[in-house]
Amino acid sequence: MFNLCWADEGGLPAGDRGVAYGDGLFETISMRGNRGVLLARHLDRMVRDAGRLGIPVALTDLRKACTAAVNRYADRYTSQQADGSWVLKLTLTRGEGGRGYQPGLGIRPNLMVSASAMPSTPVASGVAADFSRVPLTVNPLLAGIKSLNRLEQVMAAREIEGNLFEVIMSDSAGNLVEGTRTNLLLKTPEGWVTPPAKSLAVAGILRQWMLERLRARGEVVVERTVSIADVMGPHSLGLFLLNSVIGAVPVGVLAGQDLPVDDGLATIFNPFELLE
Amino acid sequence: MFNLCWADEGGLPAGDRGVAYGDGLFETISMRGNRGVLLARHLDRMVRDAGRLGIPVALTDLRKACTAAVNRYADRYTSQQADGSWVLKLTLTRGEGGRGYQPGLGIRPNLMVSASAMPSTPVASGVAADFSRVPLTVNPLLAGIKSLNRLEQVMAAREIEGNLFEVIMSDSAGNLVEGTRTNLLLKTPEGWVTPPAKSLAVAGILRQWMLERLRARGEVVVERTVSIADVMGPHSLGLFLLNSVIGAVPVGVLAGQDLPVDDGLATIFNPFELLE
Image 1: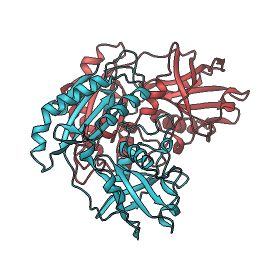
Image 2 (image 1 turned 30 degrees about the vertical axis):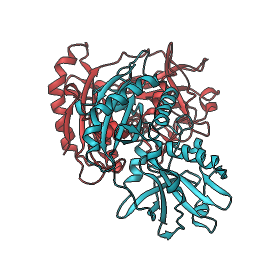
Image 3 (image 1 turned 180 degrees about the vertical axis):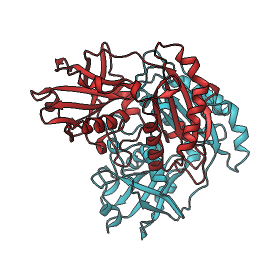
Image 4 (image 1 turned 180 degrees about the horizontal axis):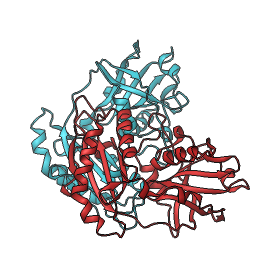
């Protein structure tokens, strides 16, 4: 069991390993009133990825913390938005203790719980994106984990200026991997294409849900590397940025070049149908 | 100017970007009473690397914080050790605010200051080390920076068990790069060899000081990749682990194989001669 640390009561202790080393992971959950969009998937991912880091946590304890968070925050935030939307954030760390990087045994994790207002919705007709100059490096042992080590994403997000909605990061081979806070999904004549999970810094909840939903509809989904030519060339039928809080956002302009905008995905993902 | 956050008064605010994303960096300084070993180098590195991250900080402000820290902590800790040694830690973060990863402009950094007891000194006759199974990935944009993104080092440090003192991490090509908390320096017939700074996750203060000191003595120092064969083969005359708090530690056994132990470096680095 973890220590529950409310952000509005001071948050994590000064000696927490999440603070010192980013030794933890987080989930950001889109809420509508007292229910969460794809909540079970978020909590399942946290339990699974905490296990990969060697941080023990039980799903039932996370569920109880969510219930306590709803009781604490839902009324305050739902009154701010017509649709009752707000954002719940869970930050799970390995806790306090150990000798330097070495965690030692029997450390009790900390769970910091915070709430914030829902960010504004991007335009459905397509957003502007650019290529990031910050290279993305993914440790195979940590691939996909929404850990607290997000300095590369911060450095890339500093490039987001003006009307830009996102920048897209590439690996050392020049393949497009993901945005700072979004996964990529490309429509092509061969079907839907997305970089494989093992290449990702963060393997998003909406990405996984979308792949399953598209396959369930009988559509072809291919997980493979995505080049700049794939996205900017004549076979590109539409690029989407996926984020479980923001949704499936079509890119209208990439690095100054117009892309075809397909609004098909927006109608597939309806957060109100996915409340738990 | 930063906000000064004492660790013993609660530390960083819950919404700090260091907590959320590891958006910051730190220095760990070996103290003797009210003076620090290679203090100027530590503070210079923090100012320089904070600049690389786009976090504004002035050296004079860091110096004032160190003075305040000595006034606050030195008496308490120096009484615990015969040589008056303790450890001062400075954690500088980008501060609070921004939208997600995007920092926004005009954020005021936070500096968390903490103190701890000096760790025990390793045996001068040589420590035991092993190879880590955790691959090291270094983003060229962040190479060398002692940032708060240290999850790889934590995962590797979990492998340190029994009488092991350190594990050594390798890059994707299999070259040895550094320990979890130490840089590598190898004595060979061609001279001293150490992996180049641009390949390092953390470019240590003692490593840089030692390279300069060896060169000033007329010794040959080569910065190049270091293979397992370099260290385990017949041309290896001694492997040292460098850490500015722990010192220059010879490795006596690596992955179960005895290594030649050269005690030359221990006599070069004398922390009491480097107090500021």
